[in-house]
Structures are given as C-alpha cells and as structure tokens.
Image 1 (cartoon, rainbow, N blue to C red):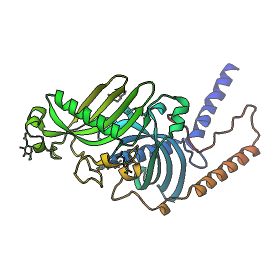
Image 2 (tube, protein in one colour):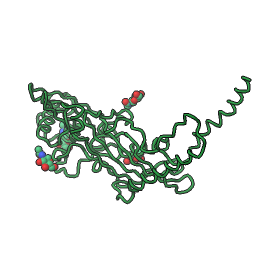
Image 3 (cartoon, rainbow, N blue to C red):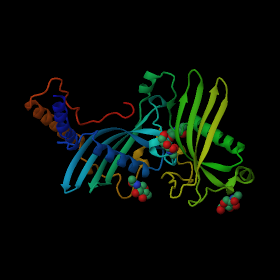
Image 4 (cartoon, protein in one colour):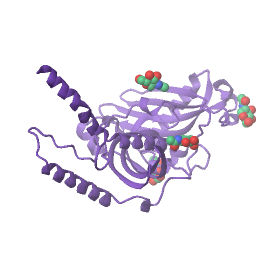
Length: 344
Ligand SMILES: *[C@@H]1O[C@H](CO)[C@@H](O)[C@H](O)[C@H]1NC(C)=O
Ligand SMILES: *[C@@H]1O[C@H](CO)[C@@H](O)[C@H](O)[C@H]1NC(C)=O
Ligand SMILES: *[C@@H]1O[C@H](CO)[C@@H](O)[C@H](O)[C@H]1NC(C)=O
Ligand SMILES: *[C@@H]1O[C@H](CO)[C@@H](O)[C@H](O)[C@H]1NC(C)=O
C-alpha cells in the first residue's frame, strides 16, 4: 500500500510542477517577466538621468502586453520608484544603493515606460517620468521633529554648502574641489537648528595648496580625467555652531560625464539658482532617442485599469465554475504588485 501511494505521488509530481510553468491568462505585476522588464526599465531611466539621485523600483502599478507576433511583444509599464542615497554620478550598482527611508523625507518617482520584448531581448521605446517629494505633513505626522526638505536655493542651504566646501578645501591635501550641484537639503528647527546638505563635486586640476594662490585658474578636469565626488555636511546653528563635512571622490569613471543644467549661466552651480526641493526626473532623465515622449505613446490609466478589472473578473468567474477544494485561496489580484520598500 505504501508503495502504491509513493507511486501515485511520483506520477502526480510532474503534473503539479507543470502548472506554474505555463501560466495562463494575463501578465501580473509580480510575474517574473514584469519584474525583469521593470528592472531593465529602471536601469535605463537611471542610465539617462543626469541630476539628483538614482531611483529604485518600489512597485509595479500596472503592466499591459500587446502581442506583436511570434516572440515579439510591446509592454507598457507603470512604475513607482523611490529615491536612493546614491547620487547619479556614484558608481555603486543600484542593487547596493540604499533607498532613502520615509523619515529622511522620501522622494517618489512615477514612470510610464514602453518596452519591446523581441526574442527575449528588451529595449525601451519610450519613457516618461516625474518625481516629487512626499508632503511635509506626512513626515511630521510620523516624526514631528524630523528635518524637512527645503528649496535648494534656500539661503541657509547655500551658506552651509559654501562653508562645507571651503572647510573641506582648507583641510585637504588633495585636489581642490568645485561644486557641481546640490542634491538635497533639509532643515530642522527644534529642538536644535540644523541644516543638512548633500552636494556633488568634481576635482579641479589644482591641489588645494595651488588653489590658494589663484583659485580662478583651477579648472574642472577634462572628461578624459574627470573625477567626481559627493559631500554630505551638517551645519549646526543653534544652540551651538558646528560644521561637519564628509567628502569623497569616486575616482575617474570612463564614459561618465556630468551635464550641467540648462539654466546655468556660469557653467557651474546650476541648482543654486533653482527653487525646488528635489531634482525632477522629468528634467533630469532624458535621452534623445526614447524619452519625454508624448502622452499618446501610453495607454491612459483608465484604459489600463479597466482591462485589468475585466481580466480579474474573468478569472474569478472561471474559478467559480470548477468545484473548489476546501480551503481554496483565490489568487492575488494581478496588479498593482507588491511594495518593495514602503508605501507613501
Ligand atoms: C546605458 O547607456 C549607455 C551609454 O549611453 C548605453 O550604451 C547602454 O546601452 C545603456 N543601457 C541601458 C540599459 O539603457
Ligand atoms: C554589492 O553588494 C554585494 C552583496 O552585499 C557585495 O558582494 C558587493 O561587493 C557590493 N558591491 C559594491 C560595488 O559595493
Ligand atoms: C589648470 O588648467 C588651467 C587651464 O588649462 C591652467 O591655466 C592652469 O595653469 C592649470 N593649473 C594647474 C595647477 O595645473
Ligand atoms: C529660489 O528660486 C525661486 C525660483 O526658482 C525664487 O522664486 C526664490 O525667490 C528663490 N529663493 C531664494 C531664497 O533665492
């Protein structure tokens, strides 16, 4: 009898295994194919982003597939992203970049991406993104004293960045650094008054010592030798004044260039004149080939949502027809997908 049971199990095993291997019906947001396409899209978006920070996937909001023929399909993805702590010039791979916590005042990105999957090879045909900081109210509710994002051209921020860079340059025996852009800035007023700044820098052709004689002659290194870096600094204003600065250079990265912002007149300090709290992905991320496409490239959310609802209803109806074993757990709705980090 035992042998018989074992035999039956053996025979049944392949049948059970075969079920997930051939998933019927629509593509769900958490399906491996959706995840793979989203990962590709996020790398693409970071690849063509020139300001601010790298973004990581938080959730696949929606996915839609348009079959084009044999081994050829178009995918429309709606993605929720979150800002990481890696500046766009930081060579750390995205997988190793920490997503900024909610209380650090999270910044969310929304992207519509149109991809082609041809013979298993993905390419991005169009992408459209924007990003925005979470509201002050959301942060204060959870953390009443937490520092909040402020505009990058805030005078306290500019004072802190200038003081921090001067301090670093006065202490280092290394290259004299110049400011490329302010990445983010937060101010806390109670119980102590603190200004937190983060900014991208680049090495010049002067040592800090040489810069003392004639700072105007110090030029950013040419692209073939460029050396970018990043500084974080905290300036305490009250009750005691203090300044802590930490700068590090990434070393030369072949092929990586920094594109100054469009509205920079001096060729430097692009973000200093700008009144925003975060670099918007809409402006930071662009690629001459496939970006900032007109909205007509993308199905409207309403259409996409409708098709998902229809599919879900269809699935439920199908399941209802078959006799359900006791304890049957209905499948999770195909979209939106799971939250990778936290919900805003
Ligand atoms: C990233 O950018 C480089 C240079 O522009 C390009 O060759 C590469 O294909 C891009 N990768 C992705 C995933 O878009
Ligand atoms: C990224 O993280 C992995 C696993 O933690 C580690 O093995 C690898 O060295 C890290 N790479 C970088 C560039 O930090
Ligand atoms: C840096 O480059 C500028 C312009 O090429 C040049 O005039 C200056 O002498 C260089 N400074 C040093 C220390 O090499
Ligand atoms: C910051 O920039 C905005 C416009 O970009 C401007 O309206 C505002 O006055 C500026 N703030 C400061 C403190 O310079």
